[in-house]
Length: 175
Length: 262
Figure 1 (cartoon, each protein chain N blue to C red):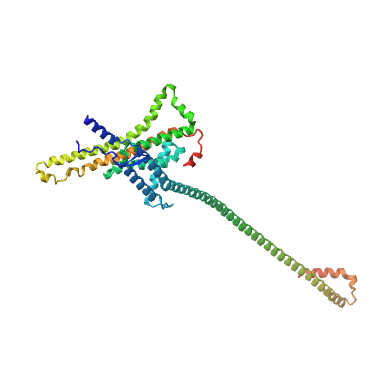
Figure 2 (cartoon, rainbow over the protein chains, first blue to last red):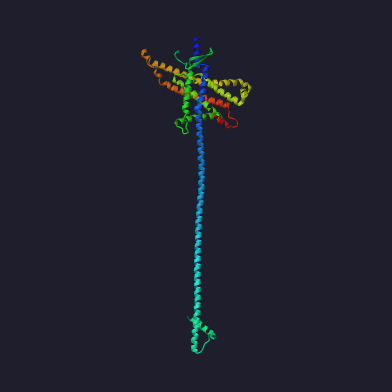
């Protein structure tokens, strides 16, 4: 019996039914919960979340700027190509215009030269004709003079024009 | 047998008399709880202050642990129950450190006191009931006892009582049992020392300390205090998460508002 009481006493102290302890445990865990939530869990969680958000934003921004950079590069390449084509076109146009101008100038020059030559020829022909006429007149006078001297009488140029002309023509051809 | 102290449990320190017959019995467990609470508040304050966007090593560890906690709660209870993560974390730290404090050999482990673990287990039950009533209404909660058939009502009531009791006794039993075993082994090692040096005269023998007590209990302590303490804390938290998570199942329509409550 003594052993039994001893055992129950020991068992009682081992199990220790004391509801004040339970109350104290509740108070402790409540205080600890409030403090840890305020001091540790919420700030750390908020920090992690805000950093996560920041990282996400940064990645999004990087992705966006990468895309826009690629697009801009494409645009610039396109523009460069256009500019090259344009400059090629301008150069070609200039060359063609220059060629046209050259041809024009050459043609003009040729025409001018030809015209000058023609005019010169005409002048020469005219002067030749004039000289011929002058010579013809002089020669006919001389011929009339000589003939009147030879024949001894007056030769009337009006009556013998045909004869004189024929003579002169023959003389000219002989030259 | 008399000098073998298995009374690793709480010892009465003093009583405070209230209204004559009511006496608040203050035990050694109170000291343990107080030490753990104050220490953890200090640790939490140290760990949670000076948080920066670019964390140092210490902050990385703290963040890793907090992330693990939130991930565990999310996996076990669902995203809508993330508001319970701080309580689960508090419960885990409390339980683990209340087991560890027995290693100091100054005050007993607070979890070696049934009243502490029963108190925590009753909080779990209370949370379950709260969630149940919040989701189904009080009548729905009462009706839940008659399911699946009315005959099952006594069984359901017993299981409702058994749930906190089993949780409390599991945790208490592991820690207190470990303490008892450690005490027995200490005593055995002391006897072994006496036995080995028994050829010496009594006068010298009484001067020799129990040398075998050095070293050997350390390995036992690693198992019974560190490992067992960790496992019991984890199991207790896991059961709390499962029970409360079951009482508050995810809403049928995945509402994103549940996220904000955390």
